[in-house]
Image 1: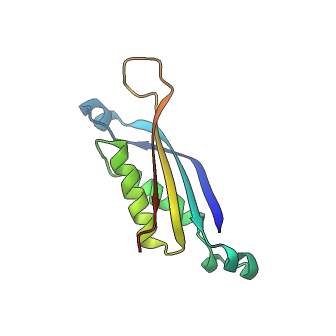
Image 2: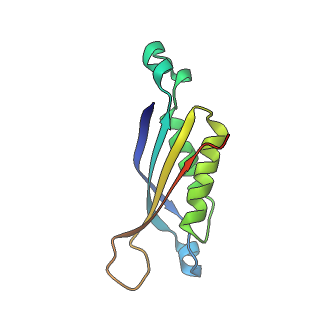
Length: 120
């Protein structure tokens, strides 16, 4: 078993419950960690035998482009696509952080983190 991480994916997106958030957009950081059997790729040195981190980044960027009221919702969409489109992944964790959230205080970011295992 191995772990592949794609960290600090920066995107501008239009998530939130407030009308202003969806109109103006905000900056987000997304971190993704997946577990998979990487034995074959360690021996073969072939991209087809591993989890392609270009694919992981693409899923994050595409799912972040679709507005959601809640960070939980967009995080779940990211996980669902990853499991649907890459059969090697057995466990995945995604953390979606909104930078400078409009919550009436000096808060650097808020983060929602979800972890799921592949369902058989």
